[in-house]
Length: 332
View (cartoon, rainbow, N blue to C red):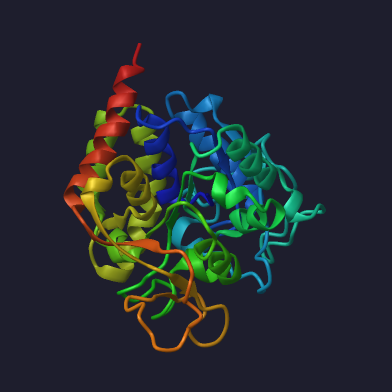
């Protein structure tokens, strides 16, 4: 995770879901530098009922190979949470990075706490862990490179990212998490996981939360609802400037919903590759035909289950209900 306003909603939703046990959060560069993402993860968890017991492990500060992109501060704010706090005041800063360049920490990212945590957890709970990535895929790629058994020990890999049948959101071809580290994304989406699912813009752009629903969440979920609504205000204003309407796309919570209620989605299976350079860098391309006369760079790769349809209204209600129920249950 690279919190991020919609990351904050996804984290709150996951921790509040009784169907899920959140074993850890691993942070990564993306919406903000990784040291800010780590501080934000701790801050979000401090507002979520039961969140203080969740482990946070700081991860990769830069992509595997490409130069880091500028951080999208105009989207999520200077702090990643809608300019609602000063991350430098947090006791949870693993190191002070360069906010402009996203410079890597002193130690090799492959040995970062996040990569260690991922490997430890799948080995501790073999074939039981769902790895959900709602940020760039650098940490997961490092885990795959460091532990040859990592993919086969995971139960399911769920990735929020990509745009298969629709335009991207940073270019006509690419979605943000993919373009941040396309090499890592291609490694992950071609790895031999027992099951890999892609919850991309094809469905997440349909899950919209209005100002009115944010205020409803504030009322129904005292504490965490207000925290999320305050953080989302900046993000809503960004959407208003782009679309002329006050709302936000809940990209990352859509991926949590897929894990909890896969019946709300339709998927299409087929290998997926990620373009790693050139005009369409970050594009996710699925082989929908799979019967080519001559082998392709998609041939013999494992299928990825790409989400193509969604019950968007039900996903929004699921987010509202899970957070509201947990907040109400914890009122003394």
